[in-house]
Image (cartoon, rainbow, N blue to C red; front, side, top):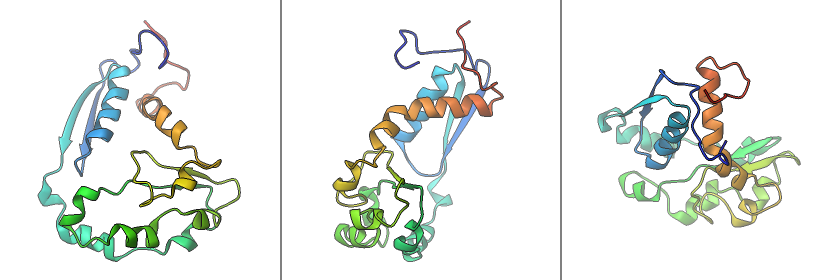
Length: 172
């Protein structure tokens, strides 16, 4: 559909999709909005007030973590997320080097996953922070395909969740 001259179908015409974002995320919000609009849905966006996300919750998330190595054993897919470096000043966050040492998907850590495992990351990525470039650019990385297909996947999920038949939507 992305290659068609008209990239809009009526699959969700008349439906309203409500997006609730618990954190500011322009890139994610836009990708969902594009998917919804290409399916002809009406969209409403809400952002949670900051009071719903107290700093104590974020600090708890940083203080309580699972060691990465045991979690990687036998994993089929390893999805890394971008840390938002602009928020580091707001919480008790380790240095970038400490973050890499404790949490980054390095070649050594990725070797613990299943041999057929793939590495994913929605981008943009902080190379050398949450993911090593050797993994991001390696043969088991599907990051470029993931980013390329992100809107199409969101469209397919929205279509199916809204009662779509599983058949590709057609123009009317």
